[in-house]
Length: 412
Image (cartoon, rainbow, N blue to C red; front, side):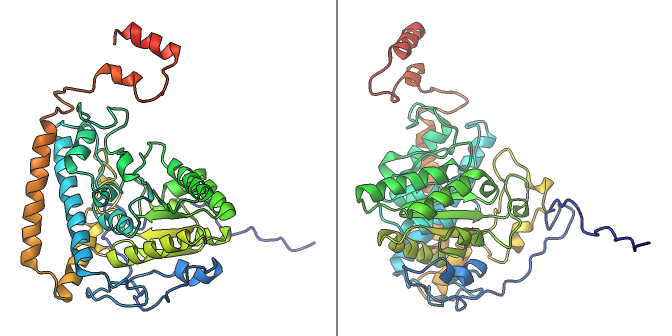
């Protein structure tokens, strides 16, 4: 009689759980990564050369507000002041728009709270004519490109001055003049679209680089992998960013990947892959400028994991206290992106708490004035709204007979 073989003790099926639940005390391990850890890479590096960077964390500003390491872009003080102003403008703008949503002036809103540095620093590192394919939390790119707040508010409110005339949900901005392409509610489609536009730019010989972002949850979808595959094969001038802000709508990032992190997922595709501190303005600027130079020189795509934390709710329809501790974001080791840049600027003698307070007051006044002007054109609760005839316009260069027939039936 032979000995019985013991049954396997491993679990047959594993469902990851969030590190903290609402009733728990928030706790994150202290970061060991420092600005001096990762060397600056040549723009023609291979994916294999970036392995250390994919598993590490690229930082420039340390915990004391000091900038260091080979990736320090050593930006002019005026660029730093402009970046800080853009971030403050976005945060104050978001707060005002949330108040409008809560009072019924618009139907839906999503804040970028805690993630303001991402789109702003990265877009500032690009050229004005580069393509921007955002996800929900990159509206700040429009500030960098010069869009005014009234125009953005008109879209969110859906009044008669909305530049897309009610064809998109609030915060689904699009702005042709700024090369800012509308996001879509079926998240993830922008990854493929961005790669396609980058391929077209390369084919035409334009010096236009494309950047796109999606969230950690969205990276579990096929669109993410389709985009990586095409970027790997055709090597177009594109920067592919996963914003790992730790949560999708209400599920933790560990449900989106079984690997050690998101950055390393680009390595098997043969794409240089780097993880960057998403609350570090200087690190974001530096890596994006590097990736832009790389793409412009014909070396292909760069894959980034932007490591950050969603400080607020997923959207105006979400209550994060139902799935995580209320003060969770206050314990994130990466801190607050605005505070970190402010403290760095104070440490090098170009800023002060007094100047910071004055800037907040100035921006707040501008946002209130913009709000008053935008609502003078109408709001969700009271109108006026874009005319019904606009559902038939600005789609076809030559209106098909059946669409014209429908318009005539409507009497418009």
